[in-house]
Image (cartoon, rainbow over all chains, first blue to last red; front, side, top):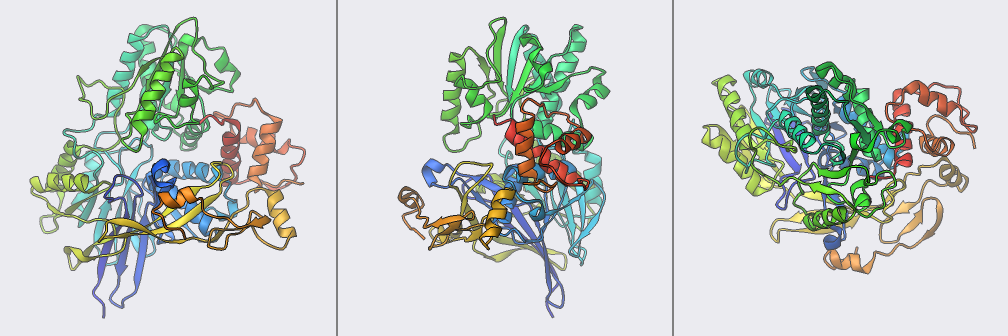
Length: 566
Length: 68
């Protein structure tokens, strides 16, 4: 007879080298030895292709039942690639409606056939559901992406684990978010282990709320009258966009002027707006209910947008990290056909996102800002971790700082049953960040443990322990061969982490049949008696139903990946 | 080549060709269905579900708004 136990394993996200590729697995072992598992998230970790030869890395996908916390790429972007590699896999995805809608957008970007899309199950905060023998309760949290949730996962033996996803402890302004009383109720029922987002826990205090962004954006409006504005943002971070919408409404009310008009430039912002509409969160409607002001949100193809006077326009664009083909970079090169500086007013570009410290982002953004100036745009960009002064800022992170973790520790301490204290563990961060999280809870008198990737927390008979054995962490390197996201051509290389050398090692290239997007390609392939072409492997193979050719790995790429070709 | 509801990539391409200046923000499902049915190659008497409509609209958005 086996010992009943519940295990939590970080499959990715507790990385030595930074944030990304988040994925976690919970496994229950029954007395008869049978195991059942579910996975939380399956994300992507960015890579500097110039250095590594790889576009990004994705976490493993070890279960067909997936709970997804929110729509950011470091939590969801691995899924589409796993489907590419294994399109017949019967995936079930449990997530918030906004995340569901956004995932459809991501899957259609790569032309995934409808028959190969996972089965989506929309979940709601507080409404429990059963998955593979586990009872799951979604818990609303606040993050920059709307619809962010954490999950309480209860095993058949009553063990309760809480993964809070990415969060901060101030209220959301668009839809449901963190509420202290809800979290108090969660802890009152007993939580054995709580896993906490460690992205910003080395910073002091509480992360400012989105209402601070409203104040900050309003200040920008006051300081820049008669100015055409471009605002760079991250599309999925709609909480911040909505803070701007409210700012525009309040400014209009306070000054007795006509509200400015938002004009969306680029597919992803238009898609996020659509996803919000599908969830009953049309930003104009919600703003009107809150403020009584009608703020219009159009897009660059709308004829009405062209007739808005330049000084009343606020263009929302993406590309805050100077992504080469994004709207903001094109604007800096004078190549954005939808947006031009106006000669009838001032022109201001607000980059409403700090530079993400990764690769050569800082250099690229600095260069882009210089180019924007030469195109006639004044610019503003926030400093990462800058002090929050007088409750005013025009950018806030969606991740909690040390103050947020202290607040969570206080909620747990006040409400958890005396005979069932929670153990807190840092995830979603490197060693410095996860240990910083654990030190905060330890200083508050709470129990803590520490894990790395491929390491397990084991709960058995009420005892919480770190498994002494560390497995082999794995990931898949994704190489984009043609840089055409609408008709992609990916190579996938399996890698494992060597804990002795502390390096990632290639294991094999993954062979797969490419999914064909267009009806014409599928009919052609059927006519030739085969499916879409094979990918990868040592012997290359046919590609996309067309005549085959041997695909050699680029020698420069081989060198970048450590000199070893497969 | 007759198009059916599930051929969302081809439908999106056809929509973008037929209606290149159409703004997609706040487009209602009823309008999207009407536009799809107006395509000369479209030949499907069935009714689309929510996922199909989402797929068509989102793919059209990628085709129609390349600045991203």
